[in-house]
Image (cartoon, rainbow, N blue to C red; front, top):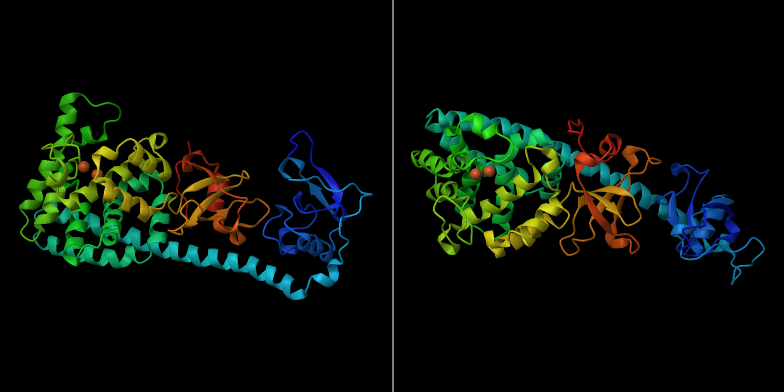
Length: 421
Ligand SMILES: [Fe+2]
Ligand SMILES: [Fe+2]
């Protein structure tokens, strides 16, 4: 409202709906409000403050719709707050507050379990790919079994999986690129209604899409900055190399071989190795192309070059649409949500939070766990933006730009190995 008026102390009797206040002397545990700072919504909240024995609060004019009454001014309608406010109503507020903490604990537990599965799977996958490249025939069967288990392990609890993927450190992510691409692709595949066989082929193609890189000199793979033309041409050959490797393997699904061969082909014919166009590209390869591009945007070798999930999706939809099958790209965005779980966001009131879950029907208003230094981490608040008309997401923030203490606070993970600039 008036940004020039500094905050000041007022009596609770001066309050009226629309005044933004901060509870100063009351710790977060001693009141049933969700926040220690909030805009007074109705007379019932004022009554509750009185009932709690709170006499004074801090008024923040900048965030208020109206200023408080003057000390000598009488409220328009004299209320008898004590009688209006039942103990039941107060108990309900406490219950809501506790319930949010419970939800958060359950969510964290799920994510921790998901993380454990994920780490185990990366190990298993690395063994399989080593055996495969070493010519062990049985390893294709192992891979098929692995892919079939993956859908049960990660697609059932999509939110925890996405959350985990988004909060991993860049180094962990480089390590888990094939797994990320496989999981993201299979999420889309399931949404697209693929058959069980197609899902297996999709998972196999996605997991091994870059297997041809085993034949590219390591020095070239690790090179940062712009590549020379011959270097780029050499690197691009990983798609053909990969297809050649997997086509030697008897039980490797044919459709998955096509995914490996075509994952860099683009809808408009600008891809490689063949410059295929539109429907001449395998449908599963279209899916993997989207998941691969997305994961690469989010996890660049130089963390400062990485995009947030939100920006990666906007970029793909805004600038790179011509490369992809638009229908599948739309499905991909629907699977992830505009702000995928794990995205750190700044809200319109300036608070920082991490997206916990997304309601597919209201993607712009996810549930967010909030950073609040007054609230202990294990009690951290979840707000459902769909229920808070005054709050909205202002922008997404890169994890690497976040101060360590906020990251520690918001992260659902037990151990944090984030890269900090
Ligand atoms: Fe590739
Ligand atoms: Fe890739």
